[in-house]
Length: 512
Ligand code: SF4
Image (cartoon, rainbow, N blue to C red):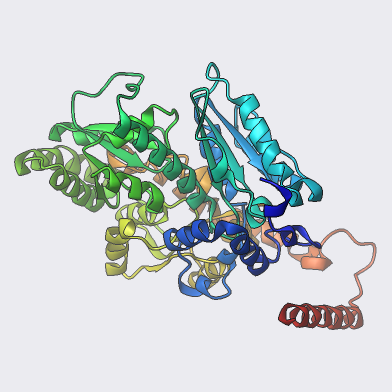
Protein backbone atom coordinates (compact mmCIF):
# COMPACT_ATOMS: atom_id res chain seq x y z
CA UNK A 1 0.00 0.00 0.00
CA UNK A 2 1.48 3.36 -0.94
CA UNK A 3 1.05 6.85 0.35
CA UNK A 4 -1.55 7.60 -2.31
CA UNK A 5 -4.10 5.10 -1.07
CA UNK A 6 -3.69 6.28 2.45
CA UNK A 7 -5.70 5.13 5.37
CA UNK A 8 -7.84 7.94 6.70
CA UNK A 9 -5.60 10.39 8.56
CA UNK A 10 -8.63 12.21 9.97
CA UNK A 11 -9.19 9.23 12.21
CA UNK A 12 -6.27 10.16 14.41
CA UNK A 13 -6.50 13.91 14.34
CA UNK A 14 -7.05 15.73 17.57
CA UNK A 15 -7.74 14.28 20.93
CA UNK A 16 -10.35 12.02 22.38
CA UNK A 17 -10.84 9.48 19.60
CA UNK A 18 -11.55 6.25 21.34
CA UNK A 19 -14.22 4.49 23.28
CA UNK A 20 -14.65 7.49 25.56
CA UNK A 21 -15.87 9.70 22.71
CA UNK A 22 -16.34 10.15 19.01
CA UNK A 23 -18.19 7.03 17.88
CA UNK A 24 -19.94 8.78 15.02
CA UNK A 25 -16.68 10.31 13.87
CA UNK A 26 -14.80 7.00 13.97
CA UNK A 27 -17.62 5.20 12.19
CA UNK A 28 -17.69 7.79 9.42
CA UNK A 29 -13.90 7.65 9.13
CA UNK A 30 -13.91 3.85 8.89
CA UNK A 31 -16.62 3.92 6.24
CA UNK A 32 -14.68 6.49 4.24
CA UNK A 33 -11.58 4.32 4.57
CA UNK A 34 -13.12 1.27 2.90
CA UNK A 35 -14.49 -0.60 5.92
CA UNK A 36 -18.20 -0.12 5.06
CA UNK A 37 -18.75 -3.75 4.14
CA UNK A 38 -17.38 -5.23 7.36
CA UNK A 39 -19.17 -2.60 9.46
CA UNK A 40 -22.47 -3.27 7.67
CA UNK A 41 -22.06 -6.98 8.42
CA UNK A 42 -21.39 -6.21 12.10
CA UNK A 43 -24.45 -3.94 12.24
CA UNK A 44 -26.52 -6.84 10.89
CA UNK A 45 -24.95 -9.52 13.08
CA UNK A 46 -24.87 -7.51 16.31
CA UNK A 47 -27.88 -5.21 16.13
CA UNK A 48 -28.51 -2.49 18.64
CA UNK A 49 -32.06 -2.67 19.82
CA UNK A 50 -34.42 -1.31 22.43
CA UNK A 51 -33.23 1.81 24.17
CA UNK A 52 -29.65 1.19 23.08
CA UNK A 53 -30.58 1.70 19.44
CA UNK A 54 -30.90 5.39 20.14
CA UNK A 55 -28.37 7.00 22.40
CA UNK A 56 -27.91 3.98 24.62
CA UNK A 57 -24.64 3.12 26.26
CA UNK A 58 -24.00 0.05 24.17
CA UNK A 59 -23.26 2.34 21.31
CA UNK A 60 -20.00 2.65 23.18
CA UNK A 61 -18.44 0.00 25.38
CA UNK A 62 -19.82 0.59 28.86
CA UNK A 63 -17.29 -1.56 30.61
CA UNK A 64 -14.64 -3.66 29.00
CA UNK A 65 -13.15 -2.98 25.56
CA UNK A 66 -14.98 -5.33 23.15
CA UNK A 67 -11.72 -6.43 21.54
CA UNK A 68 -10.97 -8.33 24.73
CA UNK A 69 -13.41 -11.02 23.54
CA UNK A 70 -11.43 -11.72 20.37
CA UNK A 71 -8.10 -11.44 22.15
CA UNK A 72 -9.17 -13.93 24.79
CA UNK A 73 -10.35 -16.44 22.20
CA UNK A 74 -6.99 -16.21 20.42
CA UNK A 75 -4.95 -16.43 23.62
CA UNK A 76 -6.76 -19.54 24.78
CA UNK A 77 -5.90 -21.48 21.62
CA UNK A 78 -2.85 -23.71 21.42
CA UNK A 79 -0.27 -22.88 18.77
CA UNK A 80 -1.92 -19.56 18.03
CA UNK A 81 -0.22 -16.19 18.21
CA UNK A 82 -2.41 -13.14 18.71
CA UNK A 83 -1.20 -9.71 17.69
CA UNK A 84 -2.89 -6.36 18.31
CA UNK A 85 -2.71 -3.31 16.13
CA UNK A 86 -4.02 -0.25 17.96
CA UNK A 87 -3.27 2.68 20.21
CA UNK A 88 -0.76 1.94 22.96
CA UNK A 89 -3.26 2.80 25.71
CA UNK A 90 -5.81 0.30 24.32
CA UNK A 91 -3.14 -2.37 23.99
CA UNK A 92 -1.91 -1.70 27.51
CA UNK A 93 -5.43 -2.13 28.90
CA UNK A 94 -6.13 -5.26 26.86
CA UNK A 95 -2.82 -6.88 27.75
CA UNK A 96 -3.31 -6.08 31.42
CA UNK A 97 -6.82 -7.57 31.39
CA UNK A 98 -5.64 -10.70 29.55
CA UNK A 99 -2.98 -11.41 32.13
CA UNK A 100 -5.34 -10.54 34.97
CA UNK A 101 -7.56 -13.32 33.61
CA UNK A 102 -4.65 -15.74 33.49
CA UNK A 103 -3.47 -15.68 29.85
CA UNK A 104 -0.46 -17.95 29.53
CA UNK A 105 0.99 -16.37 26.40
CA UNK A 106 2.32 -13.03 25.30
CA UNK A 107 0.22 -10.62 23.33
CA UNK A 108 1.92 -9.42 20.15
CA UNK A 109 1.82 -5.71 19.31
CA UNK A 110 2.63 -3.69 16.21
CA UNK A 111 2.94 -0.09 17.44
CA UNK A 112 2.23 2.94 15.27
CA UNK A 113 2.44 6.66 15.34
CA UNK A 114 0.67 9.30 13.29
CA UNK A 115 3.31 9.06 10.59
CA UNK A 116 3.27 5.29 10.12
CA UNK A 117 -0.51 5.39 10.16
CA UNK A 118 -0.97 8.11 7.56
CA UNK A 119 1.77 6.91 5.23
CA UNK A 120 0.56 3.31 5.19
CA UNK A 121 3.77 2.15 6.83
CA UNK A 122 1.73 0.57 9.64
CA UNK A 123 0.31 -1.96 7.21
CA UNK A 124 3.81 -2.74 5.98
CA UNK A 125 4.96 -3.16 9.60
CA UNK A 126 2.08 -5.56 10.24
CA UNK A 127 2.93 -7.54 7.11
CA UNK A 128 6.60 -7.73 8.10
CA UNK A 129 5.66 -8.84 11.64
CA UNK A 130 3.35 -11.55 10.39
CA UNK A 131 6.05 -12.86 8.02
CA UNK A 132 8.62 -12.81 10.81
CA UNK A 133 6.34 -14.68 13.23
CA UNK A 134 4.92 -17.28 10.83
CA UNK A 135 6.92 -20.26 12.03
CA UNK A 136 5.02 -23.52 11.35
CA UNK A 137 7.01 -25.28 14.09
CA UNK A 138 5.39 -22.93 16.62
CA UNK A 139 2.05 -21.89 15.20
CA UNK A 140 -1.00 -23.17 13.35
CA UNK A 141 -2.41 -19.68 13.08
CA UNK A 142 -1.62 -16.02 13.63
CA UNK A 143 -4.49 -13.73 14.55
CA UNK A 144 -4.07 -10.04 13.93
CA UNK A 145 -6.68 -7.70 15.40
CA UNK A 146 -7.26 -4.13 14.23
CA UNK A 147 -8.50 -2.02 17.15
CA UNK A 148 -10.44 1.24 16.83
CA UNK A 149 -7.94 3.63 15.27
CA UNK A 150 -6.44 1.26 12.65
CA UNK A 151 -9.98 0.17 11.69
CA UNK A 152 -11.15 3.77 11.43
CA UNK A 153 -8.17 4.60 9.25
CA UNK A 154 -8.72 1.59 7.00
CA UNK A 155 -5.62 -0.51 7.64
CA UNK A 156 -6.39 -3.28 5.11
CA UNK A 157 -5.76 -6.56 6.93
CA UNK A 158 -7.66 -8.33 4.15
CA UNK A 159 -4.60 -7.75 1.95
CA UNK A 160 -2.39 -9.91 4.16
CA UNK A 161 -1.51 -13.33 2.73
CA UNK A 162 -3.94 -16.03 3.83
CA UNK A 163 -1.12 -18.42 4.58
CA UNK A 164 2.61 -18.04 5.21
CA UNK A 165 4.71 -21.21 5.38
CA UNK A 166 1.58 -23.18 6.27
CA UNK A 167 0.64 -20.79 9.11
CA UNK A 168 -2.88 -19.43 8.65
CA UNK A 169 -3.21 -15.65 8.87
CA UNK A 170 -6.51 -14.38 10.26
CA UNK A 171 -6.93 -10.60 10.15
CA UNK A 172 -10.03 -9.12 11.81
CA UNK A 173 -11.34 -5.64 12.57
CA UNK A 174 -12.75 -5.43 16.10
CA UNK A 175 -13.51 -1.76 16.75
CA UNK A 176 -15.49 -0.68 19.81
CA UNK A 177 -17.66 1.42 17.48
CA UNK A 178 -18.70 -1.60 15.40
CA UNK A 179 -18.84 -4.55 17.79
CA UNK A 180 -21.05 -3.71 20.79
CA UNK A 181 -19.82 -6.17 23.45
CA UNK A 182 -16.81 -8.32 24.19
CA UNK A 183 -19.14 -11.33 23.99
CA UNK A 184 -19.84 -10.60 20.34
CA UNK A 185 -16.15 -9.99 19.67
CA UNK A 186 -15.58 -13.66 20.59
CA UNK A 187 -17.94 -14.49 17.76
CA UNK A 188 -16.05 -12.25 15.32
CA UNK A 189 -12.91 -14.36 15.72
CA UNK A 190 -14.65 -17.72 16.14
CA UNK A 191 -16.67 -17.03 12.97
CA UNK A 192 -13.57 -15.99 11.01
CA UNK A 193 -11.75 -19.16 12.06
CA UNK A 194 -14.71 -21.42 11.25
CA UNK A 195 -14.97 -19.81 7.81
CA UNK A 196 -11.30 -20.47 7.16
CA UNK A 197 -11.49 -24.05 8.45
CA UNK A 198 -14.65 -24.75 6.43
CA UNK A 199 -12.78 -23.69 3.29
CA UNK A 200 -9.94 -26.05 4.16
CA UNK A 201 -12.29 -28.98 4.89
CA UNK A 202 -14.10 -28.41 1.59
CA UNK A 203 -10.80 -28.37 -0.29
CA UNK A 204 -9.50 -31.74 0.96
CA UNK A 205 -8.57 -33.94 3.93
CA UNK A 206 -7.86 -32.16 7.22
CA UNK A 207 -6.21 -33.12 10.53
CA UNK A 208 -8.21 -35.44 12.79
CA UNK A 209 -9.02 -34.40 16.39
CA UNK A 210 -6.29 -35.07 18.96
CA UNK A 211 -8.36 -37.82 20.62
CA UNK A 212 -9.54 -39.38 17.37
CA UNK A 213 -12.90 -39.14 15.65
CA UNK A 214 -15.95 -39.97 17.80
CA UNK A 215 -17.78 -43.15 16.84
CA UNK A 216 -21.09 -41.47 17.67
CA UNK A 217 -22.72 -38.44 16.03
CA UNK A 218 -21.63 -35.35 17.98
CA UNK A 219 -23.23 -32.14 19.16
CA UNK A 220 -21.01 -29.07 18.93
CA UNK A 221 -21.49 -26.66 21.82
CA UNK A 222 -21.44 -22.96 21.08
CA UNK A 223 -20.25 -20.75 23.95
CA UNK A 224 -17.53 -20.72 26.60
CA UNK A 225 -18.82 -22.58 29.63
CA UNK A 226 -17.69 -24.01 32.92
CA UNK A 227 -15.40 -27.00 32.12
CA UNK A 228 -17.70 -29.55 33.82
CA UNK A 229 -20.67 -28.53 31.68
CA UNK A 230 -19.61 -30.28 28.43
CA UNK A 231 -19.07 -33.44 30.52
CA UNK A 232 -22.55 -33.12 32.03
CA UNK A 233 -24.07 -32.47 28.60
CA UNK A 234 -22.26 -35.57 27.26
CA UNK A 235 -23.98 -37.65 29.96
CA UNK A 236 -27.38 -36.25 28.98
CA UNK A 237 -26.76 -37.15 25.32
CA UNK A 238 -25.53 -40.69 25.89
CA UNK A 239 -28.91 -42.47 26.06
CA UNK A 240 -29.76 -40.97 22.66
CA UNK A 241 -26.62 -42.46 21.09
CA UNK A 242 -25.02 -39.03 20.74
CA UNK A 243 -21.79 -37.57 22.12
CA UNK A 244 -20.55 -34.13 23.01
CA UNK A 245 -18.37 -32.53 20.33
CA UNK A 246 -15.97 -29.61 20.69
CA UNK A 247 -16.85 -26.36 22.40
CA UNK A 248 -16.60 -23.31 20.11
CA UNK A 249 -14.56 -21.09 20.54
CA UNK A 250 -12.16 -24.03 20.31
CA UNK A 251 -8.85 -24.51 22.14
CA UNK A 252 -7.01 -25.75 19.08
CA UNK A 253 -7.20 -25.23 15.32
CA UNK A 254 -7.97 -28.84 14.42
CA UNK A 255 -10.99 -28.84 16.74
CA UNK A 256 -12.60 -26.47 14.26
CA UNK A 257 -12.91 -29.29 11.72
CA UNK A 258 -14.45 -31.60 14.34
CA UNK A 259 -16.82 -28.79 15.36
CA UNK A 260 -17.99 -28.42 11.76
CA UNK A 261 -18.28 -32.18 11.36
CA UNK A 262 -21.17 -32.51 13.83
CA UNK A 263 -24.74 -33.80 13.75
CA UNK A 264 -26.10 -30.53 15.14
CA UNK A 265 -24.97 -27.39 16.94
CA UNK A 266 -26.26 -26.40 20.39
CA UNK A 267 -26.27 -22.60 20.62
CA UNK A 268 -25.80 -22.62 24.41
CA UNK A 269 -24.80 -18.94 24.31
CA UNK A 270 -27.12 -17.13 21.95
CA UNK A 271 -24.92 -14.42 20.45
CA UNK A 272 -22.67 -16.39 18.04
CA UNK A 273 -24.29 -15.09 14.86
CA UNK A 274 -21.26 -15.26 12.55
CA UNK A 275 -20.36 -18.74 13.81
CA UNK A 276 -23.93 -19.93 13.26
CA UNK A 277 -23.69 -18.63 9.68
CA UNK A 278 -20.69 -20.88 9.11
CA UNK A 279 -22.39 -23.93 10.63
CA UNK A 280 -25.48 -23.31 8.54
CA UNK A 281 -23.33 -23.01 5.43
CA UNK A 282 -21.93 -26.44 6.35
CA UNK A 283 -25.53 -27.74 6.50
CA UNK A 284 -25.79 -28.11 10.28
CA UNK A 285 -28.99 -27.60 12.28
CA UNK A 286 -28.82 -25.12 15.17
CA UNK A 287 -30.65 -25.91 18.41
CA UNK A 288 -31.52 -22.97 20.68
CA UNK A 289 -31.47 -22.69 24.51
CA UNK A 290 -29.65 -25.15 26.80
CA UNK A 291 -30.29 -28.07 29.17
CA UNK A 292 -30.87 -26.04 32.34
CA UNK A 293 -33.22 -27.15 35.10
CA UNK A 294 -36.08 -29.58 34.52
CA UNK A 295 -38.10 -27.77 31.85
CA UNK A 296 -35.05 -26.52 29.96
CA UNK A 297 -33.47 -29.97 29.85
CA UNK A 298 -36.68 -31.64 28.73
CA UNK A 299 -37.22 -29.20 25.86
CA UNK A 300 -33.56 -29.29 24.88
CA UNK A 301 -33.33 -33.10 24.75
CA UNK A 302 -36.44 -33.13 22.58
CA UNK A 303 -35.04 -30.44 20.26
CA UNK A 304 -31.64 -32.15 19.95
CA UNK A 305 -33.26 -35.54 19.34
CA UNK A 306 -35.56 -34.11 16.67
CA UNK A 307 -32.73 -32.19 14.95
CA UNK A 308 -30.62 -35.35 14.72
CA UNK A 309 -33.47 -37.80 13.85
CA UNK A 310 -33.09 -39.83 17.05
CA UNK A 311 -36.10 -42.19 17.53
CA UNK A 312 -38.62 -40.83 20.06
CA UNK A 313 -38.13 -43.91 22.26
CA UNK A 314 -34.45 -42.98 22.80
CA UNK A 315 -35.31 -39.34 23.46
CA UNK A 316 -37.82 -40.53 26.07
CA UNK A 317 -35.19 -42.84 27.55
CA UNK A 318 -32.84 -39.88 28.04
CA UNK A 319 -35.63 -37.83 29.61
CA UNK A 320 -36.62 -40.68 31.93
CA UNK A 321 -33.04 -41.15 33.01
CA UNK A 322 -32.21 -37.53 33.75
CA UNK A 323 -35.32 -35.48 34.47
CA UNK A 324 -36.22 -37.12 37.82
CA UNK A 325 -32.60 -36.70 38.96
CA UNK A 326 -32.68 -33.01 38.04
CA UNK A 327 -36.00 -32.51 39.81
CA UNK A 328 -34.60 -34.23 42.90
CA UNK A 329 -31.47 -32.06 42.93
CA UNK A 330 -33.51 -28.86 42.57
CA UNK A 331 -35.82 -29.89 45.41
CA UNK A 332 -32.91 -30.75 47.71
CA UNK A 333 -31.24 -27.37 47.24
CA UNK A 334 -33.93 -24.70 47.24
CA UNK A 335 -33.22 -21.00 46.80
CA UNK A 336 -35.56 -18.63 48.56
CA UNK A 337 -35.67 -14.92 47.99
CA UNK A 338 -36.05 -12.26 45.32
CA UNK A 339 -33.09 -12.02 42.92
CA UNK A 340 -32.36 -9.67 40.03
CA UNK A 341 -29.93 -10.99 37.39
CA UNK A 342 -27.81 -8.96 34.99
CA UNK A 343 -24.64 -9.64 33.05
CA UNK A 344 -22.84 -9.72 29.72
CA UNK A 345 -21.91 -13.40 29.40
CA UNK A 346 -24.91 -14.58 27.37
CA UNK A 347 -26.07 -17.08 30.00
CA UNK A 348 -28.21 -14.62 32.00
CA UNK A 349 -31.56 -16.05 30.86
CA UNK A 350 -30.37 -19.60 31.60
CA UNK A 351 -29.27 -18.64 35.12
CA UNK A 352 -32.65 -16.99 35.73
CA UNK A 353 -34.45 -20.17 34.62
CA UNK A 354 -32.38 -22.25 36.99
CA UNK A 355 -33.00 -19.90 39.91
CA UNK A 356 -36.75 -19.86 39.30
CA UNK A 357 -36.88 -23.65 39.16
CA UNK A 358 -34.93 -23.67 42.43
CA UNK A 359 -37.72 -21.61 44.02
CA UNK A 360 -36.41 -18.03 43.71
CA UNK A 361 -38.51 -15.05 42.65
CA UNK A 362 -36.69 -13.43 39.71
CA UNK A 363 -38.47 -10.27 38.56
CA UNK A 364 -35.78 -8.93 36.19
CA UNK A 365 -33.09 -10.26 33.84
CA UNK A 366 -30.84 -7.85 31.97
CA UNK A 367 -28.31 -8.99 29.39
CA UNK A 368 -25.88 -6.90 27.35
CA UNK A 369 -26.37 -9.35 24.48
CA UNK A 370 -28.90 -8.84 21.68
CA UNK A 371 -32.14 -10.70 21.13
CA UNK A 372 -31.56 -13.64 18.79
CA UNK A 373 -33.57 -16.75 17.84
CA UNK A 374 -31.28 -18.88 20.02
CA UNK A 375 -32.57 -17.52 23.31
CA UNK A 376 -36.23 -17.44 22.14
CA UNK A 377 -37.36 -20.52 24.17
CA UNK A 378 -35.80 -19.01 27.32
CA UNK A 379 -37.46 -15.65 26.69
CA UNK A 380 -40.82 -17.36 26.21
CA UNK A 381 -40.40 -19.43 29.39
CA UNK A 382 -39.40 -16.40 31.45
CA UNK A 383 -42.12 -14.17 30.00
CA UNK A 384 -44.71 -16.83 30.85
CA UNK A 385 -43.61 -16.45 34.48
CA UNK A 386 -43.88 -12.68 34.42
CA UNK A 387 -40.14 -11.98 34.32
CA UNK A 388 -39.07 -8.71 32.69
CA UNK A 389 -36.27 -9.54 30.23
CA UNK A 390 -34.16 -6.67 28.93
CA UNK A 391 -31.85 -7.38 26.01
CA UNK A 392 -28.99 -4.94 25.40
CA UNK A 393 -29.59 -3.76 28.94
CA UNK A 394 -27.76 -0.62 29.96
CA UNK A 395 -26.10 -0.20 33.32
CA UNK A 396 -28.79 2.32 34.21
CA UNK A 397 -31.56 -0.19 33.46
CA UNK A 398 -29.86 -2.84 35.58
CA UNK A 399 -29.41 -0.47 38.51
CA UNK A 400 -32.97 0.87 38.16
CA UNK A 401 -34.23 -2.73 38.38
CA UNK A 402 -32.34 -3.19 41.66
CA UNK A 403 -33.90 0.03 42.98
CA UNK A 404 -37.36 -0.93 41.76
CA UNK A 405 -37.46 -4.53 43.02
CA UNK A 406 -35.31 -4.17 46.18
CA UNK A 407 -34.15 -7.79 45.81
CA UNK A 408 -32.67 -9.96 48.55
CA UNK A 409 -29.75 -10.47 46.18
CA UNK A 410 -28.54 -8.67 43.05
CA UNK A 411 -26.44 -10.72 40.62
CA UNK A 412 -24.66 -8.43 38.22
CA UNK A 413 -21.63 -6.78 36.71
CA UNK A 414 -19.11 -4.89 38.85
CA UNK A 415 -20.92 -1.50 38.86
CA UNK A 416 -24.31 -3.14 39.52
CA UNK A 417 -22.85 -5.07 42.44
CA UNK A 418 -21.25 -1.89 43.76
CA UNK A 419 -24.52 0.04 43.56
CA UNK A 420 -26.41 -2.78 45.28
CA UNK A 421 -23.87 -3.09 48.09
CA UNK A 422 -23.97 0.66 48.66
CA UNK A 423 -27.70 0.26 49.18
CA UNK A 424 -27.00 -2.58 51.69
CA UNK A 425 -28.33 -5.21 49.28
CA UNK A 426 -26.24 -8.41 49.08
CA UNK A 427 -24.78 -8.84 45.61
CA UNK A 428 -22.72 -11.34 43.63
CA UNK A 429 -20.54 -10.85 40.55
CA UNK A 430 -21.95 -12.75 37.63
CA UNK A 431 -18.62 -13.46 35.94
CA UNK A 432 -16.57 -14.57 38.93
CA UNK A 433 -19.19 -16.35 41.01
CA UNK A 434 -22.00 -17.54 38.77
CA UNK A 435 -20.13 -18.37 35.55
CA UNK A 436 -17.61 -20.30 37.64
CA UNK A 437 -20.14 -23.05 38.37
CA UNK A 438 -21.84 -25.73 36.29
CA UNK A 439 -25.30 -24.78 35.09
CA UNK A 440 -26.32 -27.69 32.85
CA UNK A 441 -28.06 -30.97 33.51
CA UNK A 442 -27.92 -32.72 36.87
CA UNK A 443 -24.69 -31.04 37.98
CA UNK A 444 -26.14 -27.60 37.29
CA UNK A 445 -29.33 -28.22 39.24
CA UNK A 446 -28.47 -27.11 42.75
CA UNK A 447 -24.94 -25.86 42.01
CA UNK A 448 -25.92 -22.24 42.61
CA UNK A 449 -27.86 -22.73 45.83
CA UNK A 450 -24.95 -22.69 48.26
CA UNK A 451 -23.34 -19.48 47.06
CA UNK A 452 -26.70 -17.74 46.57
CA UNK A 453 -28.13 -18.72 49.95
CA UNK A 454 -24.89 -17.73 51.71
CA UNK A 455 -25.00 -14.32 50.02
CA UNK A 456 -28.66 -13.76 50.88
CA UNK A 457 -27.86 -14.73 54.48
CA UNK A 458 -25.36 -11.83 54.62
CA UNK A 459 -28.01 -9.13 54.63
CA UNK A 460 -27.56 -8.44 58.36
CA UNK A 461 -23.85 -7.76 57.79
CA UNK A 462 -24.66 -5.18 55.13
CA UNK A 463 -27.08 -3.47 57.50
CA UNK A 464 -24.41 -3.39 60.21
CA UNK A 465 -21.85 -1.98 57.79
CA UNK A 466 -24.26 0.69 56.61
CA UNK A 467 -25.01 1.69 60.19
CA UNK A 468 -21.31 1.76 61.03
CA UNK A 469 -20.12 3.71 57.98
CA UNK A 470 -23.32 5.67 57.45
CA UNK A 471 -21.96 8.89 58.94
CA UNK A 472 -18.70 9.14 56.96
CA UNK A 473 -20.19 10.94 53.99
CA UNK A 474 -21.02 10.10 50.45
CA UNK A 475 -19.70 10.90 46.97
CA UNK A 476 -17.37 13.91 47.10
CA UNK A 477 -18.02 14.23 50.83
CA UNK A 478 -16.67 10.79 51.69
CA UNK A 479 -13.31 10.29 53.36
CA UNK A 480 -11.58 11.46 56.51
CA UNK A 481 -11.84 15.20 57.14
CA UNK A 482 -10.56 17.37 59.95
CA UNK A 483 -13.61 19.60 59.58
CA UNK A 484 -16.98 19.00 58.00
CA UNK A 485 -16.50 19.79 54.28
CA UNK A 486 -18.09 23.03 53.13
CA UNK A 487 -20.19 22.91 50.00
CA UNK A 488 -19.40 25.49 47.32
CA UNK A 489 -22.44 25.55 45.07
CA UNK A 490 -21.03 28.55 43.18
CA UNK A 491 -18.03 26.45 42.00
CA UNK A 492 -20.36 23.74 40.76
CA UNK A 493 -22.55 26.24 38.93
CA UNK A 494 -19.47 27.74 37.30
CA UNK A 495 -18.14 24.34 36.16
CA UNK A 496 -21.57 23.41 34.85
CA UNK A 497 -21.72 26.62 32.80
CA UNK A 498 -18.31 25.87 31.33
CA UNK A 499 -19.23 22.29 30.42
CA UNK A 500 -22.46 23.41 28.71
CA UNK A 501 -20.49 26.02 26.76
CA UNK A 502 -17.94 23.40 25.66
CA UNK A 503 -20.65 20.97 24.56
CA UNK A 504 -22.38 23.71 22.53
CA UNK A 505 -19.07 24.58 20.88
CA UNK A 506 -18.44 20.93 19.94
CA UNK A 507 -21.96 20.59 18.54
CA UNK A 508 -21.51 23.74 16.44
CA UNK A 509 -18.18 22.38 15.11
CA UNK A 510 -19.82 19.05 14.24
CA UNK A 511 -22.40 20.86 12.12
CA UNK A 512 -19.77 22.64 10.02
S1 SF4 B 1 -9.82 -0.46 21.03
FE1 SF4 B 1 -11.10 -0.73 22.85
S2 SF4 B 1 -10.09 0.53 24.43
FE2 SF4 B 1 -9.31 1.19 22.44
S3 SF4 B 1 -10.64 2.93 21.82
FE3 SF4 B 1 -11.48 1.03 20.92
S4 SF4 B 1 -13.03 0.31 22.38
FE4 SF4 B 1 -11.70 1.78 23.45
